[in-house]
Amino acid sequence: MTAPRRLIVGISGASGAVYGLRLLELLRGTDIETHLVLTRAADVTREHELDLSAKELRALATVHYPVTDIGAAIASGSFRTMGMIVAPCSVRTLAEIATGVTGNLLTRAADVILKERRRLVLLFRETPLHLGHIRNMLAVTEAGAIVMPPVPAFYSRPASLDAMVTATVCRALDLFDIDVGRLARWGEDLPTRPQRGDPTAG
Image 1 (tube, helix red, strand yellow):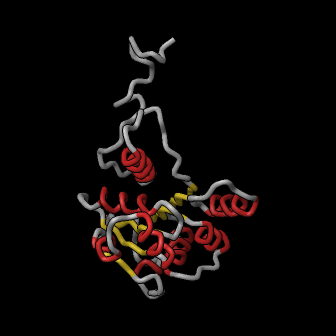
Image 2 (image 1 turned 90 degrees about the horizontal axis):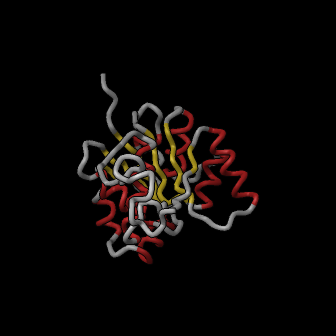
C-alpha cells in the first residue's frame, strides 16, 4: 500500500511568516495533503507581516490543528506522513525540539517526526547566533533534522523579494523530492558559466 503524500507544515513566531505562507501556496495545487499547525506567536507575527487573516492562512492548508490539540493526528507516529517543515522556525521552537521538552502541538509533531526517523526541515530564523543557538542546531542535527536557514541565493539573479522567498521554499521542498516547477536550477535552467557579453565574464 502506498504511503499517503502528507506533509506537516509548522509556522512558529519568528519573523518570516511569508515562508510558511508560500509553502502552503505552492503545495495547494499538488496532490500533497498539508497538515498545518501555527503557534500563538506565529499569529502575532502574521498580523505584522502578512496581509491576510488567520482564517485565510489556515484555509490554504488541507487540514489545520489548534496548537493546543495534543491529541491531533500529527501527534502520533502511527499517522503516516512524508515529514515536516517548520517555516519559519523560532529560537524557542528549535530549543524545544532540541531538548525533546515539547510544549505544544507543533513541537510535539516535530518530536514524532524525529522518533519515527522521518524528514524534519527547520527554516531557522535568527541572526546573529550565540553558542546556545549553535548547540541546539547541533542537537537537532544529531537527532536527524536538517537545519536550513532561509539564506537567499543570488546566482539566479532574483528580480524581487518574492522570487527569493519562492526559491528558498522550493529548495526546502527539494529535500522531500517535491518539485513544484518554480525553481531555476543551476546547470539546468541556469548556465554554469557566464554568457558571452556578460559584464561579469573574465
